[in-house]
Length: 282
Image (cartoon, rainbow, N blue to C red; front, side):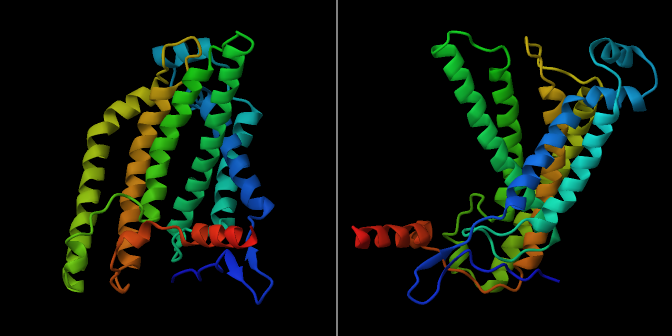
């Protein structure tokens, strides 16, 4: 059963002007705590590999570089799961987001919130590096690789959010002139192609991703982050979630009335209204 759409974040009440919805503190805190716990768990991934794998050359190599698992590592796992559940329950729609939500939509949107947080973190890392490099002439050994690592996660995770928001690239020139039954047929075909592509990518890339993860392959630089070991499996997980989200979109949009697209769709009505009020005040 579909969730009841949340109230429109920007509303006008009488002559009092617009009442702007602001996110509650929990909507900021939960993604931050989730990202922190997940980052700790990811950075200490070798400790989990050494715990759950039998002794061997790969495990011995990890043991020489990383410490054994500790209580903080287990707490990061509990925190990641707990804050993920809490985040899915508390996430709410922003002004320009898709209104009709289901359970899986909540998962995708919460991951989108975390992705937005990663973008902010990426900007902070880059600014920090620029200041140290050009102001203090003391560049770091980790900022460049950290930026690549974060940017990789942002690029992959944002695809799931884009699918949930129906904001991926679509060409409507022929679609809009089709009858509704033909539009549904096209929707089924496009969703089937997404599922087939996701299956093929997962099937073809699983072996390599599994190998890189199990040996905890790193980037080979001074900072040496585990970019291959983390991004390869993440790509397969997210592409699978994208396929599931595409199926969820098909089901939820099946009975929607056809929408005719035009150039006016690119205009942000809320931004336009804000500019009108600003001009009127001036």
